[in-house]
Image (cartoon, rainbow, N blue to C red):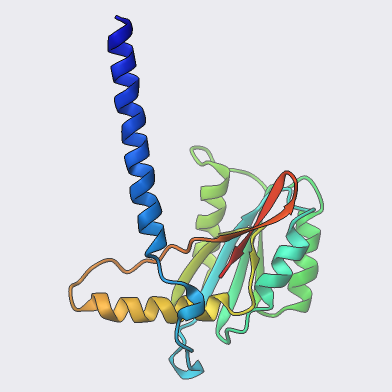
Length: 189
């Protein structure tokens, strides 16, 4: 019986190693946003960036500043306060008063059958106006050009795939910036 379990766990471990190797090679082939061609303002679709925040008082101010400092011309940020018990709502509304492209939605109660974050993101989506939608987290720090470069990169890829009718979504792999011994911040390139 010992040999059976050894072989079984060995096979399982081998599958994990193979899948990890495939994922590593796949991520290595992803294009870098820094290589994306510049996007002219006339060709830029409107973009809605949506995030849900719950009790994010410590990380939210720095992250939202980087998000609102994007050099992309046609974007809005839809921030959904998901039943926070700290000062998250006050921080969001303070930024909303200063930034016309920020819309804050407050959720007081969770409807039956919903989980918090999915409900908050759907509520944000329903209030968004953009032609393109970007979902992110409330604690993600953005480089100033990431939205412009992401849209430019996706447009290039979309036009290439349009000929063969493939998918029309993009996923960005963040670069990790270590903020402390036990924490890492996502920095989108």
